[in-house]
Length: 186
Image (cartoon, rainbow, N blue to C red):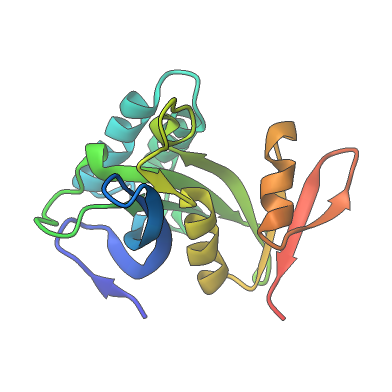
């Protein structure tokens, strides 16, 4: 079920993740909002740009931003091939999605009518590289769940360090040499 919200992005669904409770000293169930961003919308493009700045220069978020700049300038038919998604903890004031509230960002591209490639998925570095327990956990898995609810067949060429992540999230290795993983709805 999709509904449009005023910041230009399309709200897709709430997805589960874990939030750290400092009082209980454990992770408790929580949720975040999975949204689709449209680079041709100035507010959404600003969000993608801000996320690239927030996540740092050597991040997949910068690759997503570069792709968004290209998609923004192309025709409508080209725009249909790439999709941009974010997971945000923002729950109100949706006239503009605040990049500081984005927990993760992803980009997909259509391979065919039935297959989608996950080009990039990036969790905010502060939740990956943390000395203390990160405040949010399972962000990447939550984003994958949102994508699985949208698509029936997903391919991804994984970074070497991310291979276990995709296996844990029910992706199957189809090419070990190239680290290509696949997920298909039953």
